[in-house]
Amino acid sequence: NAGVTQTPKFQVLKTGQSMTLQCAQDMNHEYMSWYRQDPGMGLRLIHYSVGAGITDQGEVPNGYNVSRSTTEDFPLRLLSAAPSQTSVYFCASRNTGPKADTQYFGPGTRLTVL
Amino acid sequence: SQKIEQNSEALNIQEGKTATLTCNYTNYSPAYLQWYRQDPGRGPVFLLLIRENEKEKRKERLKVTFDTTLKQSLFHITASQPADSATYLCALPLNAGGTSYGKLTFGQGTILTVHP
Image (cartoon, rainbow over the protein chains, first blue to last red):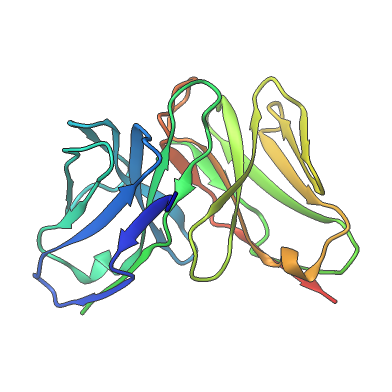
């Protein structure tokens, strides 16, 4: 299993540009989520999904869109990038069930918005 | 709203000693608490989960305690090694109650350095 994969690893955008951060998992996990990590602030939840076709907002959803058309993929879209979105973005997935609380994180995408 | 704090930004210890990291939270009662390890440039890696009805959990050289009265978790690494040097994160479900669907809120992390 590749686990959770993210592309690209690094990205530089100009203010106002749009882009999509890709996330895929091959573990057949129902739950997937996106976090951003900023210095001194810990990881914060942006959006999450409990299955294909179902998404909802997390703590910091503004400026981001998501969709979940398949179990495997959960892309994160920045519609009009702003410098405040400079961060490291992590995608995560977990299985269902009362004992399945392990979150598996991808390697991250480091985004800089100029 | 709930708040989670790891009260040491950095911890330096000598090899062989026990490292103790602290995670405090306020304003709600989580069903469980998790600890993760994060190496530079990598994603967090899950280490341990402890539930509200468990006082202590162990895994090899790791031990976690969960005091729901004090609203605090302690994370111990015994016989520490330089390879244990990393950032350690605690995480709680974003919402109170048993079902979180993997929605977590994280502390800011403690950078542990184990010196040979």
